[in-house]
Length: 368
Image (tube, rainbow, N blue to C red; front, side, top):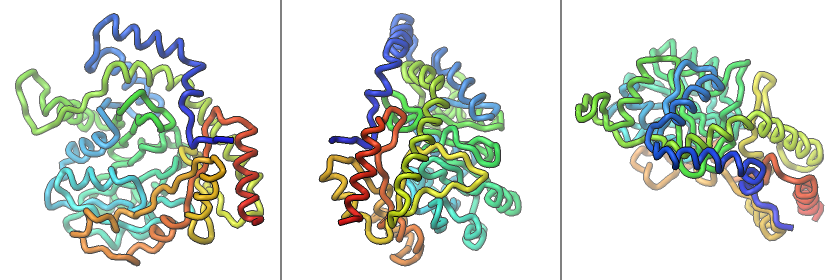
């Protein structure tokens, strides 16, 4: 049996007619750039995430970059974040000229350890970017308390966690700005790249709106150095259809996560740990082995089950960040996790037989 880590064709088929009609409408109207669909999606995402404002952008990476720009982060500044995340988190910091400063992660949730943040704060520190990894929120209360104490800005990297909750609050709504990604593989994914910032600060929203159009609020007048980062109207139309189903899809993800958790009990694997105050979205269902996970991933792959390690090289050990002076052993939890975690297929349309097959193969591996 072949079991992909994600099957977007199955998501598409039941809503094919709705998607087609939405795209056709945009094409008929020839309204492609920052059109009505984008404006309506911005309103709907802001309402969904519990924020006052949302601004559509060309990608999740751009959302991080423009969030940093809007907050005035620049060369010479330092931004604290996690070394255990997709590269774009730190890359955005570097692109605006600032210096990423890494802080180790919690061993159970893989999110940044808030109790290690304060000792990394210097006079140059201007912001913190907690990453809501794999689909659940970082421990935000202590992060926000530290930020308030030291007058720091907070950008929530919510690329993997739209719909997640922390003590009843939505991912992305707790800091100064939340950055969303609509990359096709995300729980709310478009038909190409796309992103958005969410915020409760009108001035920040207006700043990002200006920056996404080459730093211009009035045509041919440029008050800042911005960039071209506009969410396409066709992508917004697709996302508006999908948004209607998002809560249903997230509930199915949680149900399937419960199935794995129940049926993989007894194996030498750590299940995803979800604090009682969190609502997980299971963008990825990530297991942790007690040893190097590579042989398990190889066995699953040979069995037709797509499995991947997210993320095999922590950011502080990436070649391009050699200039920061970090070395092996600096962030032990991130380094251990990078060797031991692996994600298995989980998506709303996954069949019972496919899930049983994944479970049976993991049991077979450990029995052998």
